[in-house]
Image (cartoon, rainbow, N blue to C red; front, side):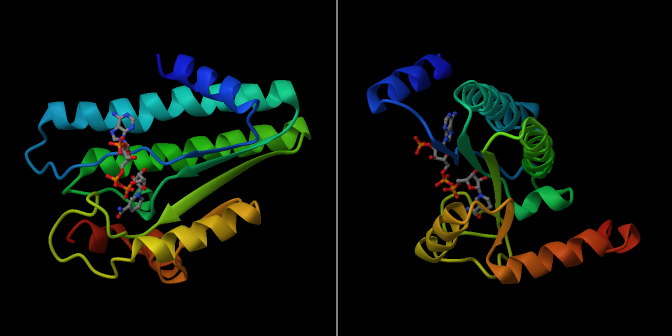
Length: 178
Ligand SMILES: NC(=O)c1ccc[n+]([C@@H]2O[C@H](COP(=O)([O-])OP(=O)(O)OC[C@H]3O[C@@H](n4cnc5c(N)ncnc54)[C@H](OP(=O)(O)O)[C@@H]3O)[C@@H](O)[C@H]2O)c1
């Protein structure tokens, strides 16, 4: 159904050279309610894969194109508060890397951009003790710039890039206690 709509849209537009996939949900789920997790997986993994595969194959056929997806800094490590959100964002990061490798091998001008924002001031930003929540217009400007430059991976903002680097190297015995 989603793909049919996408096909209709592209036919109306007369072609596709850039697709920005921003859809995504996440919820706090400390009780591990599977219904919450299922919904997150349905959109962030199944829906995401359905769209990115279709777009990538389409670009391969036409010989060019740019796929942009909004993953998240959340994909760097797991979360006790929103386990499926972080895990599905990690899936997206990994999947996009796979597609980027595929595009490089194909030697066609197909670009894959993975945008990894930190906390942004939308209804998605939930939980206690949120910090460095960024205004939407600032984030949108930085995403726009990254798309124009066809960046491969970009953290928004640079400050969140630093947090990501710290998260990556933080020893497990410390992270497990957070
Ligand atoms: N806000 C943050 O702190 C933050 C941080 C890092 C990454 N991100 C990522 O940024 C992206 C955009 O999120 P946001 O912050 O703009 O949150 P948002 O305002 O809640 O937007 C969520 C988007 O997902 C769409 N969506 C929700 N359920 C859907 C479904 N079942 N099928 C198709 N589309 C659906 C919504 O469409 P409708 O408007 O039609 O409902 C909306 O466009 C997400 O991928 C999110 O994970 C957000």
